[in-house]
Amino acid sequence: MSAPASFNGGGYMPSQNFSSCFGTSPPASYPLNSYSHPTAWQAINVLSPNLFRVASEQRAIYGSVHEAILVNLLGHVSFAAAGNFRICGHNGKTMPLTLHLRFAGPPLSGKSDAHDRFNAPVTEAMKGWKKRWHFDNVTPAALLRKITGGSILSMLSMAEGRDHLGDKVGGQLSRAFRELNDLYDSHVPAFDRADDDNEAVVNAPDRAISVVCVNVQNDKHREWLDRHAEDACGSGYLYRLMMMVTDQIAVEGAGNQQPEMALLDYDQRIIELVASARINLDGNSVSQLPVIEVSPEAENVLRLAQERFVQMPGSWLSPNDARVFAVRLVANTRRIAGCMHVFERYSGAVSADTMSRAATIAECFAAHWLETMFPPKPVPDGVQRGQCLLDALYNLARQSGMRMPGWREADIVASAPNFGWTKAEMKAAITAICGAGFAQVVPRIENGRRVIKLELILSSTQAFQPTNSAHPPKLA
Image 1: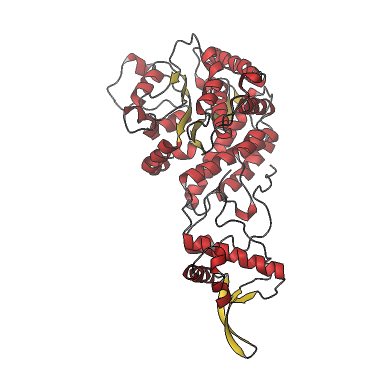
Image 2: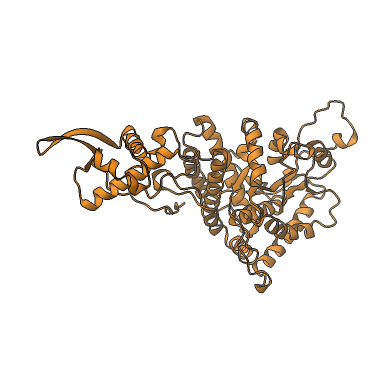
């Protein structure tokens, strides 16, 4: 896969590690080696052709944010595709095409518009299905009863999932990590009561398709993570859950002034796939669904992607956890590729092109996952002033062509009002950049007089270019 170009600008940034010298680590989304992870719009841009048109039209007509569109589109395509095919895993075992997704955004981000529009053809196609298929704030016990009763094709989805992530009864399923792990792999969760030997349990299906697509507001998502992220990671489920978070709100779409075209094609395709899934699963096991093969070239794309995914967490995760993160992300990449393959009516094995698209989409989800799991800490005022001063000094040195840039310390301190600082704040900024190893205060003899100078510490590879920001940029 060709990596996207850096959207934050290239070039050498001499003080890019300034903040980390003071124990303020950059956010996980900050690119190493000037590489920017794909944004949600870039992920939409690499969707398979028909899905790209659907997502673009949803944005144009309804104005939903890109993250909400991507999550809800993939969630509902996953439901339709998973009832028709499975996909071959790296070890020869098969895996379902089910995805577990969550979008967190502010009010007016277009959650409901995206969820309801992409859900409409699914609801239409599932009319007449004898078993319950759509679940909202269901408890784990109730969901298990429905699945054992024959609900082998189901979807947990909601446009506003506050209660689902709450601490009351309606939020129990969001914390039932063992059951969610089983459902992610299409396994029917084990029974807790050994004496529960009624007919429904004895004849319970061995496999079940269960897709999760939950929309929620940022505050409830943050609260849920603060309380349950450690347990969710320990269980392994949080590594399987694909999350997207944004603070953007929807734009004003064209509404009725633009007719739906790609969305109507989406409706027709989803209805076809769901109708086919109903036939496939009518009296048959999920384990009997046909399997999509993955071409050797696509497997190579996945291998390279996994190497990249292992590096993404940086110091946030231990090496073992980073490996788990990468392996689970590769599994979701495989599933996303399978969903696009099915939706587009592609034949044969999954191609390298489709897998490359899926890898870019998964990498975007991974960047959001890391940013929401490890939000950036506020940069202390002293560090920000040090960064500002250092950028100003590099600019001065570059503009004047200094080979050994240095200034009298008294002159730098005297310029404090130009920065809007006090002399004490300027001295603190000088202390900060010296402590970080980017400058030094040294005595010099000039014209027979002893002076104290502030000098930048340069290496042979450094160039005078400012960072343009006091801290790393956030994910777009």
